[in-house]
Each structure stands twice: as structure tokens, then as C-alpha cells.
Image 1 (cartoon, rainbow, N blue to C red):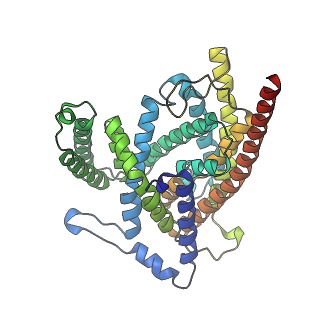
Image 2 (image 1 turned 90 degrees about the vertical axis):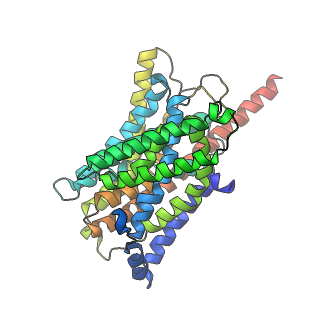
Image 3 (image 1 turned 135 degrees about the horizontal axis):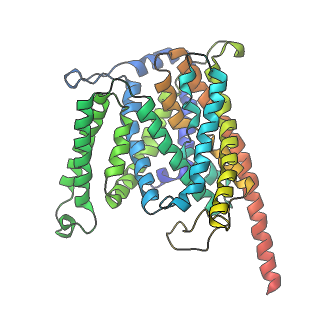
Length: 417
């Protein structure tokens, strides 16, 4: 299980699963696999009508979003987003990384039926971005990783809001009310597992509380599914309301299953599309909007917005901006230097790896246009692939730069002695 917590392993599994899904879908038996993915596993007496693919994207993926929400809550409470001054720079950069790719997509699709797919190139895959950074950025300073994590978390928050507000249809208010009750109960019950709660101090068995949380979580997911809101939002809501310490333990327990099962299964399923047998000129404008919006839009948007954020913060504080005040262990360290332009470019390149959330948004945006959805999936995979290559090169070059700085610093220290 420890191996599946590795960012490198998670990114490798995700990429391998997507490659296998795309390959299998274009082999002679590919049509049978696609039919199997589209086969329905209904539960009529509960009013659940989902295909195999939707059980993965609407059901299992809620686990991934739960973990994302727990991590986001931690950053907002005690992490790198717990104050306006600390959140300002990554927030501005994240906004730029959403607006510019969306504008690029709109430029390509303006006046067409696929313009509503503008959210697709706006997402960043946290697991993949951190995985690439871990693979190629051995000497990259911690402050760059912290900035990337904060930006990606805020990016995911924006993606969650987009899914909740732009991909909700015919909302069932009664179901939303029932979901809210289940979520509120989930949050209340989770507080019984806080380290110093009377329940824990009395040394009572914890498994009944854990079982109750599972039941309430499944009920919340079911009612959100019935409400017309995308079911993965249930995972987000549960992660936000769960008490922080128990939530952290739950996310830690679920992380290997998310990295080793949920995300690879989703990547395998989402990438299982036939390659369109058309000339490039016949591809839908949405294809080009995604393909260019992800790698180019993210670099341009995050870099420019990040520079603006640095300027604004310097004007407000009258001193250089710090992007991190705490190390990974939580101990206080000296204020970090502001990110250089090259560091912002590296983060922008990593932000272009959309993958998981972009694939989900593609499914939602083009649910009624299967051919465009297939092209969109390919565009997400290609655009993310380009971003992976570009970011790997950029991270490697920047890592070598920091290694040389470290060597020079070491030599300077030796001569000074």
C-alpha cells in the first residue's frame, strides 16, 4: 500500500491505464469493450440507471474528490491557503490558468454547438502534476512544490464549482434537501472520532462509527445522484464537512485505493475511444480548443497571472512576496524567496496536465455529442501528453539549475572555511 501513495507511481499508473484504454479501443475487439463500458447496470427499485462507465465516473470517482476536498480543507485551515496573504499569489495564478485556456477554447469554438465545452481545458490534475515534478525535479525547492500544490488545489476548487453549477440540470430540490441532511449528519458523526472526543477518550469501539459514516456517505451520494447535481459533488461535500483529523486519516486510508484502483479505472474507461478516421481539417473546433488550451493556455495564463500576483503582493506589502513559510514537517522556516519567472513557467507547464478532471468535464460537456466527446477525449490525452513532455523538460532543466546553485553554494562554504 505504501508504494501506491507515491506520486510517481500514481502518475505512472494513470498514464499507463489511459494508454491501454486507447490502445484496446482501437484493436479489433475494441468495439466489444466499448459496448461493455456502455452496458447498463441498473438498480430499478432505487431509480439508479447507470452504465458501467458512469458507475466509475459518477460513483468511484467520488472517492477521489473526497480526498481532494479533505486536502483542500486542510490547506484552508492550517496549510498554505489559511490566510489571504498566503493564498493571494496561487489564487491569482490559478485564475489566470483557468481564464486563458477557456478563452482559447472559446476563440476556436465561438458560434458553434460545442462552445459550452470551455471548462474542459481549465483543469489541472494534482496527482499527475506532482508526479511529474517528483520524477524530474529532484533539486526543485520545496517552495515551488508548495506553490504548485496550492495552485492545483485552488484549480480543483474552481473545477468543482464549475461541475456543480454548469453541469447540473433539472435539479430535484427534495433530493438536494435529503442529501444535505445526510451530509450534515456525516459531519456531526465524524466528530465522534476526533482524538479528544468523549467517545474516543472512553475507549469505545470505533467500527460502529466508521460503519455509520459509510452508510451516511452512500446515502449522501445516492441523493446527490438523484438531485441532478453530478454525483462526485457528494464526495466533495463529505470531505469538507468531515472533522479534519478523522478526515485526514480517512483520506490516508483511501489514497492507495484511489491511486491504484479508482483513477486508473477511470483513465482506462475514459480513454477507451476509437481514433476518429477523419482528416485534421474535419475535426471539431473543440478538439483544437482543448489541444491548444491545455498546454499553451495554462503556461501563458499561470505565468502572466503569477507575475501580476507578485507585483500586486509587492505593492500591498512593500516587500518581496513569500510563497511559503512552513516546511513539509510543519516547522517554521525562514521566509522563502519569491518564485522566479522560470519557476512560474515550470508550474504553468505542469498545470497543463489536465487529465482526470478534464476527461470528466469532457464527458459532461459533450454527453449528447458522442463523436465530439471522443475527439475531446483524444484532445485531452494529446494536450496533457504535450504538457507532460514540456513540463518534464522544463522541470529537468530547472532542477539542474538548482543543483548547480547548490554545488556553487557548497563550494563557497568550503572556501569560506
